[in-house]
Image (tube, rainbow, N blue to C red; front, side, top):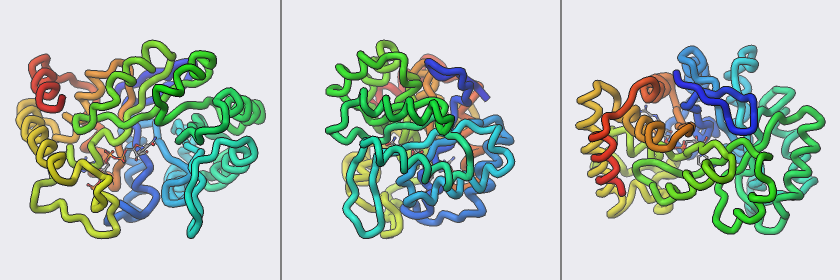
Length: 313
Ligand SMILES: NC(=O)c1ccc[n+]([C@@H]2O[C@H](COP(=O)([O-])OP(=O)(O)OC[C@H]3O[C@@H](n4cnc5c(N)ncnc54)[C@H](OP(=O)(O)O)[C@@H]3O)[C@@H](O)[C@H]2O)c1
């Protein structure tokens, strides 16, 4: 496994992080708790020490499953958790970065994770009204109480940059969507990393599964229990799907050349292309974790990168 130290911290993490979105238990088709628990342990056994979750995934279920899966191995793991999406069953969902909400959200997350501390507490989405400096004050309060160790950003945009300049050095990382199927945030990946002292963490790194090579035009008719049936999951619909399958054809050629799974090519491209990045990838079972850890400890050839760059630009 490859490791890096997150900016402004002493956190040494694996460059492959297991994403906890499927641990939410719904929205990904067939997901089973037993397999998710095995997946977390397989990850730990194979050098992955970094796990990402959020209060909102499965309305807390992801945190519960992750906490249960880590159990007595909690000390081996670095947990990234996220707050800021106020979601309750039957109620409208809204973004919230207010002091009182963050304080209570953190207590709820600690309880569900069954832990005394969260390693990285991440602002999932900005709420459009609470100044970032105020959010930082709340997070500093939690840090002083020992409930969180560090904090981070996610889904930040051009208009957050002014405030972020004043707060440089406070955050350890940022998360945004990035993959061979989604390169629209590439400029920010470099900018935030180089100019704002943030380690880039990529989400949707496998294009929600399309970049694993197992999907084709005949098997992307997901059921209603799978979020990918919805049009907003663009990777599986219309022209975007056709383009992705073209990218996957090139990936398959490269995977054969290196004798690696297609998922490992998706991950390796990011690790090689975005310096000092961490790839978040959701996994539903141990075999998927094993396919994904194969993304570590090798490199693409220059001509592979060129081919992938050209087909996915
Ligand atoms: N900050 C944010 O706003 C944000 C947003 C989204 C996600 N995230 C984080 O980023 C993580 C990754 O994103 P994601 O989970 O949405 O998408 P992803 O990692 O691109 O895709 C995950 C899906 O791909 C399939 N898969 C994974 N490994 C595989 C393998 N080796 N072989 C075959 N199929 C495999 C699984 O679904 P199937 O088997 O059903 O195909 C899995 O659920 C999330 O879990 C979450 O922690 C953060």
